[in-house]
Length: 360
View 1 (cartoon, rainbow, N blue to C red):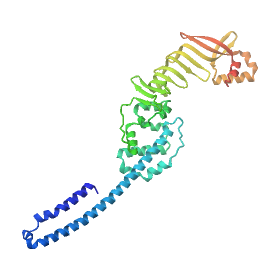
View 2: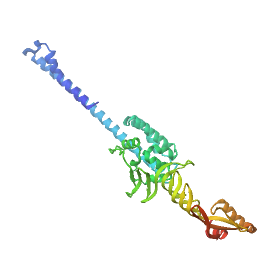
View 3: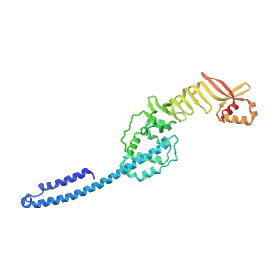
View 4: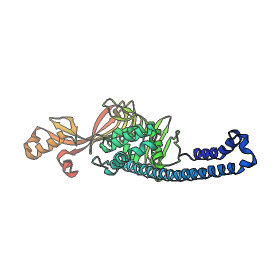
């Protein structure tokens, strides 16, 4: 029972006898000869009033104790669920090597055993969002299913090859989309407010990790710029920087419309690389490293990259069939490119080069 309602009831009971005395008792009873009758009436009434008041007060104390116990349980359950959710997110969503086999019986038990308490203590929208998150976590859904967790501009990072850097953020709560932030905040009982205009995320060493500006998104690792520009899908449906600067396992340099443009290094394989100035994806000034060249009857032409399957098969044929070299000699060369024209330089014996560098 609400404390205000209880006070109102007691107040009404206190003034009720006076209302009865002045408005309901006939004037004949108010004479001196009936004075003891009136006193007895009031004594009886106030005895009854005291009994009712004590009973109501005891009921209030019991109800309030139960309510406080229920609230304490709700607080503990919500905080436990919030901690379990973030623990799993760290392994599944943020971690560099997510463990997809993770199962969390504790989270499942908490959610199933205390669903009623959660419904009572959360708003309808929050409970629906919590249910969605818990179901995803318990179903071991793929990492990409959690994209709704993040701020809209950080979703591009999450979809790219740089997603693993998210776990280096100093404060995970700054990565969350507003509704997810509010849910986690309410579960933890935190009083923090959602910051809408955040354009910079810092790592645990207080260095810039992600930054958004008019030129796109900048991504750093240990103070080193890894990428900067606008993300999108290329013609092969790969999500990456389409315009700007990018670093990856296969390319480091500038891109335009999803193609190599400007200075860069293109790693075609472990031993084959093109570096220099690119235009529309093609090297126009620079050098191509480690290509297999065949010489035969005064002619020479490029066959394939050194670390290709074709080069491997060629090496096996040479080792198993020495007479194979009668069909021409094979070399490893670099290709110098100037103004789009190619020149072969730095000739090396193919077999010796493979063995010295342990290519196969």
